[in-house]
Image 1 (cartoon, rainbow, N blue to C red):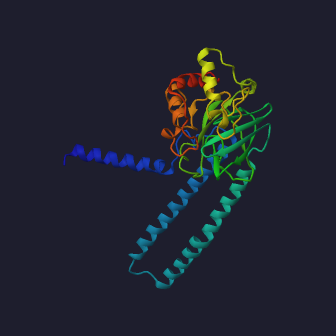
Image 2: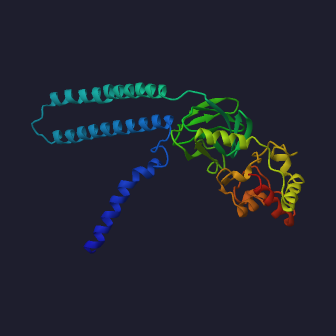
Image 3: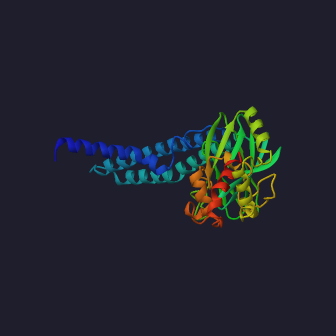
Length: 333
């Protein structure tokens, strides 16, 4: 084997060794370790505190391990003295040290919890379904799906509900995790320091499409947030073209209207996501696909092809009417 090959192999091994902690932890610089909110700052501080504490404990035990190996090689060691040292190590390392570490962690966690924001300048109801999210706003009153808007520099109290099974609400860059239990209401406070788009997800396995149960949090300046509230509280735009009108008629004449709500129209179904301003959303199916014409057409015809196991059944619609239906949905901005 040539020297060049051996050097490359050593470089590969070193790269794998250095990268393995990040891969095993499941974290990335776009998540927990890149906080953009007060709650996320607390979680990040706790993570690093436990990391360095664990590193110090590991280093200490490694030093004791090698110290013990070296002492075993001494032929003149006094057995009685060695026994006393062993007892001290057992008491110190097995009792005193764990109690001290757990005590430090306990009080650090208490201090971190007290540092969490607990205001309620804005209140939003978040409901988890298999497999999508609903967000309800109270002033003005309306609901939307899979996208949450919050104002920056503001405490946002999120009331957490679950409609079917246990879910878990998590926006890594803004907060820690909080379970959503059917029949119970939990709460979580978000506080974004700066504008941005932050990925949220379900952190509790909830079924076949748990992976595709994501949402996005858009933190915007307060004036933009107020304008967004005003826009979203309006009813759906009326059809403006013949194609949009034909698509509207196709929507109302199919099973779509019995499962979805479009404010300002007879459609008032509650089985699926609210569609009043559907075209403004970036993603389909809570992160299953981009919200473009091609994926939307496939979703309408048979959502199981894009997200197997989701509750939406195939829609029986005339092939000639599908383009008009998609055109109408794309007009709902």
